[in-house]
Image (tube, rainbow, N blue to C red; front, side):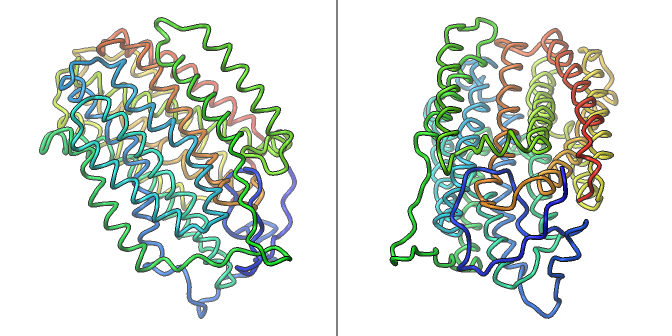
Length: 496
């Protein structure tokens, strides 16, 4: 793929109308490479990108990744409380990812069209409501509803934050500094990495309801900071006749995508007793979605762009597969530690601490490196090694080996997020950054949904050595596939 031409920064009032999803484009002109020379360089005398502006963006952006992993050390406690097994508690994982997979690009599109500040604030209000519902839930069904609301509310933060940075870049007339983007990436990766440890401590100290209640004060602080420090949304560009521009969200495309993904999740969550007839409606819905998206001038998912941008499509595939492996460990390994090895939720969280620390350190290192192929190759190799180690774990495995196995998944978690983000910024078109930023997360969530399905198949009603080994064998094969996809991808030779 050839390098893109430099894209001049537009004035705020000249922001283009939202278009179909085109991948998480960079918020600004390239920061290095051939196009960087033509891009406006940073000017230390021009204000912008202050700590006050970025603080609420970072705080809001931690909520979704934190909640995706924090619940991993609470699943056993929740199952015991309501008298249900691992196959049922897997819904707490899948429903959040299902809601997020749909809501991220939708809310990103809204951020592009209505203004990112409005969408950011509305999302935080939904998060507060979800935390209260989960903390007071009288039944397991209410927990499902809480996680559904949580997936929708937290999905607003990341695409809205990217759109806020785009508007700030246009306001000050210079590219978004690389450290700002690195901090945003680190906030997401770091919160996901510490999630299991924090979740275990909350369960040990206040019980599993603390996993839900903790969202309330965090969202309230982010809401107050956003009201004070995020500037008002710039006015939307009006048509020649003075009317407000039409908001084209493609509701049919959103509905077809949501329904198809929901049917797929219902099929995947009972792979032990597959309901084969569900594949028929899924195929019909997928075909209808493709037909409709190809007819739309502004589709929900720009299939033509993805078909013509193989490097970006491979990035999404690689990202989804990587997180399938990571979340198999995040949820499957932690349940095995509690139910087979007999560790408490708090002790399990501490056992996952090496993985969390490794992910945090490597996310910082990944944000500093300019290469893409090297860090991704190392990450894929370590994922394969970690999965292979899980094949040999048993109830008598020494503690040091358990810690090493967790660390083998922490290092890739830090490298994959930053490297794939760099790949997306390199290969994606720059239009509609809000809606585009959601699609990379959608690939990640689909991987997580598949991981929860694999765990439900492997464990059934409770974790076991044989279930862990089945999950590890599948992960090892996928790890080898990831290595091949990464090493043979010539587009990864580019530098960010």
